[in-house]
Length: 111
Image 1: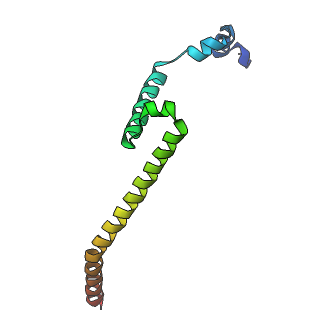
Image 2 (image 1 turned 30 degrees about the vertical axis):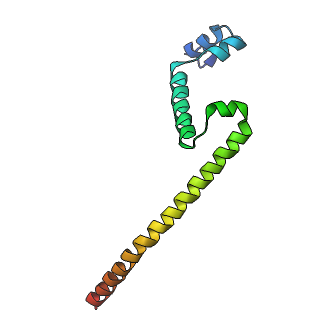
Image 3 (image 1 turned 45 degrees about the vertical axis):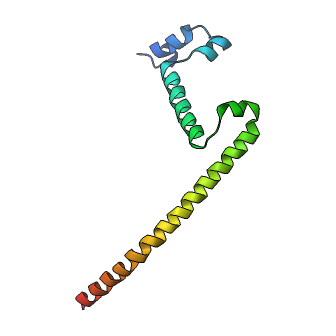
């Protein structure tokens, strides 16, 4: 039995294949690549709709439209952070005194 790797069936199949041309490599698309492109396109489309970006406007003024979209994203993030802080403070007004009361009761029980 020989340990020569070049005679293995997997190596023989690779060497028997003719080299593919540039256009054949570019335009050979598999089904999973098509499905991935469709999924990514849908996700990007949803993001564009969420931030009210007009795809036709991207063709006319790409950087201006992109700047407006980034501005909307920053406003949305900061607005969300502002609301999150407000909700935290409103909840803390109720939760922290109850927690402190329960903590004090627990300390008295241990003694």
